[in-house]
Length: 136
Image (cartoon, rainbow, N blue to C red; front, side):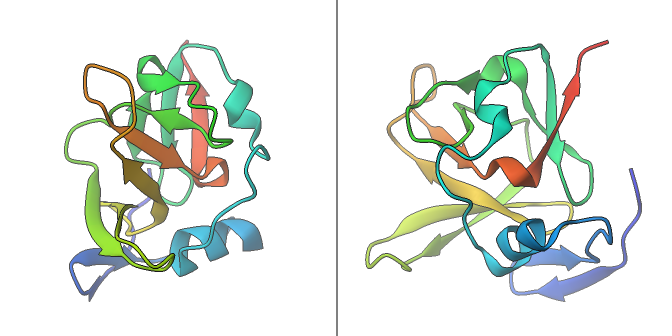
């Protein structure tokens, strides 16, 4: 994992962008964009492993937390502890809980309360913001 220079921005720690990110990744991670539903190869990933932030490499989700939500985006019922910060956005005219990588500030998606037990949560993640690391 790389070390990035920290710059404070509101509640979320914004850090240097990984120079290897694609333009789509930069738009989603740092301008809070969204990839088209059904476009991520990670929707079909079934192997054991870990999902990491595409910008900074920190581990965010275990594969055992992933489930098929039918939403068109990789979905997880929980994250690893203390890896995200949240804020409320009103871009669609109603409040949604947006989550950002606590390590680099990258926007990953939104949390909804329509997920499976045991949490009832759905972390709806943009696939291009994740790197899958298969279990060795």
